[in-house]
Amino acid sequence: MRRNNNILLILFIIIHIFYDINCKESDLKECIIDNKGKFKYIQIKANNLKNPNESKIIIRGTSDNVKYHKDIFTNFINNEINNNIEIKNNFSFDIIGGGKIIFDNNNKIILYGYSTAYGPADHSLTSSIIKKYYPNYKIEIKYD
Image (spheres, helix red, strand yellow):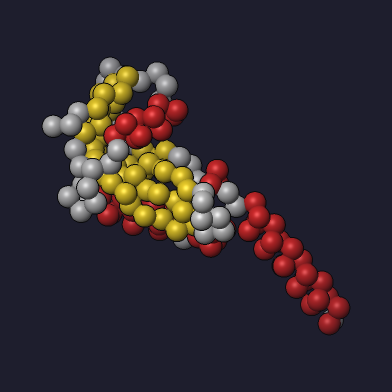
């Protein structure tokens, strides 16, 4: 019985090391947003705790149960991070800005506005990230 416990402990350690080594920024989807209507979005900086020189900007946006930009972040943590122990243990997350998105019916996305709590998102950066996921859409930035 003792030998089986030792084997299980060794397997646990190997699996834990494997996940720590292989948990990368690529494990985080760069862009998850609604694809219709008008809604708030945030830019999040994902900081790699194992390698402080590595970080990644990710975009999250939705109209579901969102009154404030912080609600998007809360949903992100609850739905994507808390359920993934590898990401949770290897990254920290900061909101670096917010804004709004409009998907119109003519394959056009409009980025505009700002978060009163977190300031404006870099809409140009958001545009370049969204373009990877919606290559057939024209993206317009408004600074009104």
